[in-house]
Image (spheres, rainbow, N blue to C red):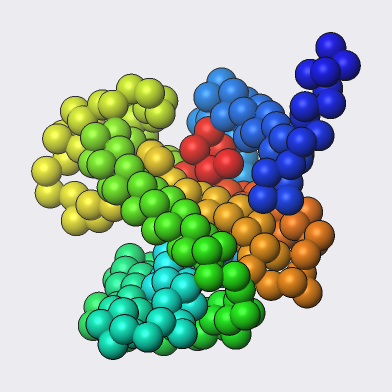
Length: 276
């Protein structure tokens, strides 16, 4: 038992396994509680068009897109100083393409909710994410080349995995959002679904529904992308001045994820079971 307890204090990327386990247990508790009382909790804490929900509707996914765009920045840092011209060109392309791609996705998927012109939203998204990735460059520009390459691969794999899984599961789950359920349910029809139901019949019953995103409550893209903020614990390894401060990044990321999930429950877009 002592050996097991001691192993929990071993560290990976500056974070102990015990700290990671505590966060996972908190998330598990929210999933279990939400799975048992999703509908009741959402009905109690839903406040249409509240400012808290609106702010995190745009802010929540931002860290995920910035870290995904930072892939190119970190690859550029890794390739700095290379003598080969081809390597420099490839490094510059990565440093430009990844932030533009991440920014366009951020604008198209998030900012477009407030800006009707999706092209303008994409441009603003590129500017917003680009600003974050410029900051990432100045924060990590003196990083060890190998560490920057490994961190870049981590951000790339995590971002691609999250985005693909979110898209596929949303299209497969077709869970109605809480605000839609509360607006359409009557005394005889309750359109609430559990996250494990994978029930397409409700959407099929409303073929003329113009709000297609109303059936994308599971899983939460905002929670998934905000969850990528946890990867910020790798930043101290890329900046010697931040060495030993990994726990602050972990605490900040956990708090940010919690607030994002709470905001998405408050504005009726997600249930507790899939917002934490």
